[in-house]
Length: 249
Length: 266
Image (tube, rainbow over all chains, first blue to last red; front, top):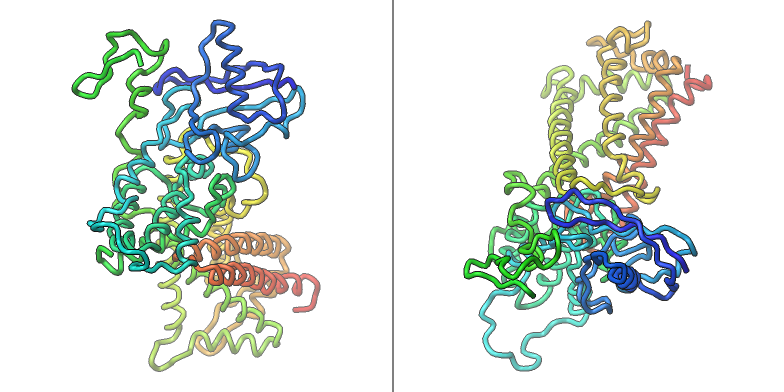
């Protein structure tokens, strides 16, 4: 299968960037988007050209390192699938495929398809963790967590922090990301003790880089961890709660 | 890595660049800048969204009650005019003449300023956070979300026309036979029929009601999120109520100009 690849090239963060067109003749339907980039880079190196910089690590959808925009859609055209699992089966011979970095003012491009996602790290640093003295490991069954609640917390903890929700949002909002963390940590016994303080800290940090939510719903369509749109409501819920309650927990 | 980090955390280029033309320190540290898109805002976006949600609920309740009042037009000319007169004299002598109307107007105006002001700030923040590369190719699935600004501006224009047409009776907007309400009697029925007998006014009303449906349907659904409803049943109820209220307000209002133009009301 022959694919015409339009790929974003940008040498430095300050560069304006441009699209470059290359052709890969031996793409196969079972290839992932990242494997297509690998193949393209092999070709570029053989031709003595600079390979395309992109991020990837586990390639099994759990690390959150990969993330390119494929034909305008973060990660790729298939819903709720990370770039590493986006196969080329939907592409026909001779078709064009456009690869660009995750787009957001909060994610400046470092080089080619690699973006700086430290804005998300700053939110986690601000409050996306449990910072209490929990003592030694408790005895089994001394801290009871209902099964239903544990499942809900795990569903929200599934976020891999890839940043696709931000890139999918026409407002550059990070509500799905922040909401999933806030919900996850507010449901569990240790995380709950800092519920209010955490909400204030994470929202304060979020406001400085990310936009408001207009409920387009694009984020939960691309989320490889299937975080539901409910997470978005958790941002305002935790914000209102911490505002009126005015306590650390 | 071919480069060595100095004590200050900077990448030294002594060993030569990692990649031709690349920003080595950005590559090495995975970080371009510590700067933010904006300084911490005095009014955070989530607070502004709550302001929009609360003022939006006030508008939604108002248009719902307004629509139900409008439907009294089908109960006959006298009954409708009596209703219009009652709105001006209700709660007398505790309130002066038109007292309730002026309270409602003041509340609505306050909500309008808050709603439009918050929308403008949020719109500009969204654009800044998104950056230069806009999200294109959004399908019909979020048509209502994408058109909130457009439908909002149409509604704002309609409200101005509507007040000039049927409240103040300003020449140009109102029909030639407009008669203002007096202390003893209202002429709401005659004014309404005369206004909608002008096809342009009726068409603008129709367009405005479609815009209102789109704006309310998405707006009320957004309210559910903005007020922090995370429960599954509550969200499902909110979704249904949003659609039902939006549809009811549009249909209830739209049959009035259609009835006038088809001669059912005259």
